Length: 210
Image 1 (cartoon, rainbow, N blue to C red):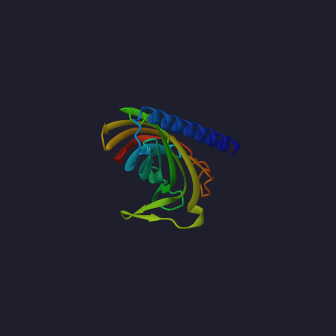
Image 2 (image 1 turned 120 degrees about the vertical axis):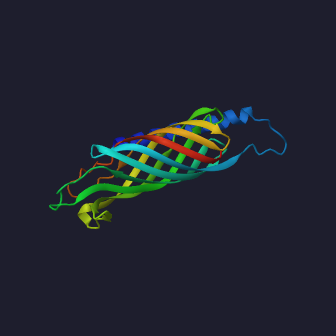
Image 3 (image 1 turned 90 degrees about the vertical axis):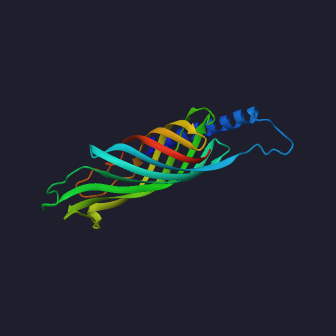
């Protein structure tokens, strides 16, 4: 936990310093006028698809987020993600049904954007939130979420990411993303406490005023 706190503190310091540098550079490059406030606010919505591993098995993570962009260089907003892996837990609960692990998480994100006016640049979003995970039963082509305490759980999550963004058009950006999930311990039957702590890689598609 101490290592996590130190890592998050360092990430926040780096993000804030990058944001401040971007503000200074944009102010220096901008033509100043009598009535200019030298600010430009916008916003965006995004969808994402990513690959990760859950319990050493392939997993797909689908997500969406939306945020307010301050002066082109810093975004704040909300994001949410859903995931499922391809594990077949045959007879794990002593019956003939198949199971997958699935769930979701979401919360507040902060996103410094480095050199946003360049056609290719970097952003550093970090998500703070909570989520839930459960075994999903596949029976008669219908998914059933287990509701018992030993087969589902809620957790806290912190997920810092690095995104390589491409300004495709004025109102559309595409990004390659890589992140790592830090979570509280998962307390479920036959499940490792750190089952969700893993790297993720994927694509993000952003639409809005940048």
